[in-house]
Amino acid sequence: LDGLEGCRRLKAAPESATIPIVFLSARSDPADVKAGLAAGADGYLTKPFDPVVLAERIKAICKGS
Image (cartoon, rainbow, N blue to C red; front, top):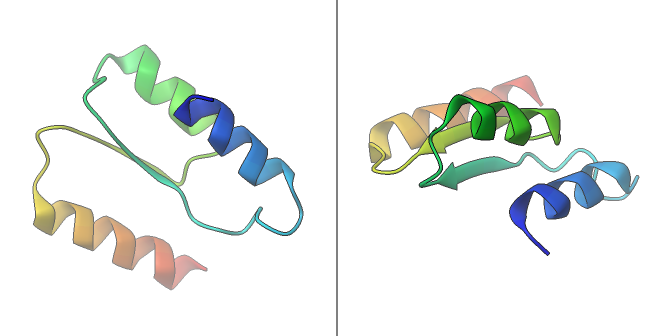
């Protein structure tokens, strides 16, 4: 089970559909980012990543919930 399929399954299940998902991946191709967001991710960051940016993204997602 890869991350995309895991995300799809979590977002499809009523009991987990509202759990925010942020991909943190080494795959930085625009097609990979698009696929992650299309799978239902609330965010997608690529490695190497800035921990401050990750924290801010998580805060923004939690405020929107």
